[in-house]
Amino acid sequence: MPRRKKSEAEVQPEASTEAATEQVQRMPISELRPFKGHPFKVLDDDAMAETVESIRQVGVANPLIVRPHPEGGYEIISGHRRHHAAELAGLDALPVIVRDLDDDAAVIMMVDSNLQRESILPSERAMAYKMKLEAMKHQGSRSDLTCEQDAHKLDGKKSRDIIAEQAGTSKDSVRRYIRLTNLIPEVLDMVDEKKISMTPAVELSYLNPEEQRSFLEAMDYAQAAPSLSQAQRMRKKSQEGGCTLDDMCNIMDEVKKDDLGQVAFKTSDLQKYFPKSYTPRQMSDTILRLLEQWQRRRQRDQQR
Image (cartoon, rainbow, N blue to C red; front, side):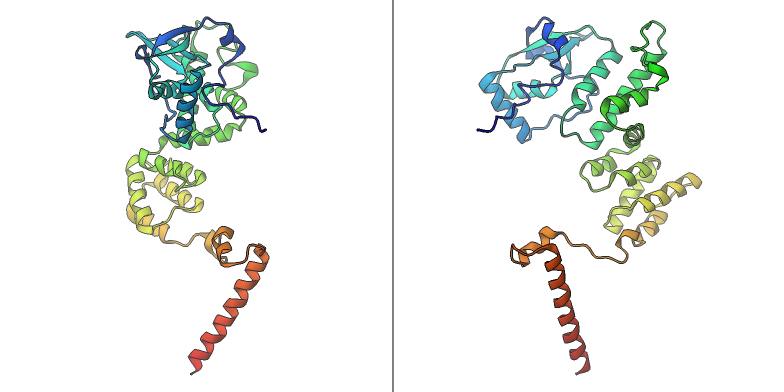
C-alpha cells in the first residue's frame, strides 16, 4: 500500500532537534495572536480542510513557536495555519514552545519556517524576502551583536546573498521578488493570479503608483497583458519624464513580437476533435490539410 502523505498538522519544517528538546506547554488559543505583518495568506482551501480533519483525528502533534507579546498574550512566530485549523476544529488550547526573541530574530524565524512550504504566491515570497532582508540588515548594523553569524557578515557576504543561498535561489531572483513589493495591490494581485508574468511585473514596479493605476486602465483598454518589451518601454518613458495613459495605450496597442509569425494552440484544446491515438504531429498535418481544402473551396466560391 502507498504510504499516507503526512498532513501539515503532523510535520512542520521548524520541528527541529532544538525545538524537540525545549519545554512544550499547552496554551489557550485565546492567548495567541498572529505575527504583525505576517505576509503568508491563511486560506480556507482544500489543504486547510485536510489539516482541520487531521487535527480533529490526531490533534496538533508539532508545537507552535511563539514569543511573549508586550501587550499581553503571545505572538505566533510559526504555526499560523495550525492555529487557524485548530480554531476551526474546535480546540481551545494548543501545544507551544515559548522563545524570547527580539523583533529581527522573530522575523527571520517566521520567514524561514514558511518559505519551505510547497506553494507560495509571488506576493508572499516578495514580502517575506523584503522583511527578512530588512531584519538582517538591522541585525548587521547593531553594535550589541558580537557573533559574526548573527550580524550576517559571513565571509563578506551581503544579506541578499545569504537569503538567496538559504532559499536555494539566485540573488538576482531575490532582488526581482523584492521589486514586486513596489507594485500597488491591484497589480500585485494580477501577478498572483498569473494575469501578468513575473518579468514584465518587475519592470512595471519601477512605475510610480499613479502610473500603475493608469497601467490598469491601459491593460483593460487593450484586453491583454503586457509583454516584457512593452513593460520595459513603459519603464523607460516613466524614467524619462513620465508615462501617461495615452503612452501606455499606444504601447499596449502594438502587436507583441511573440505573436508575429506564429499561431499557437494548446494540445488539450485540440484533442477533443481528434481520436485519442493521434499525436500532435498528426493533428497538425490534419489541420493543415483541412485548411487547404477550405482555401480551395473559398477560391471556387470567389470565382463564381
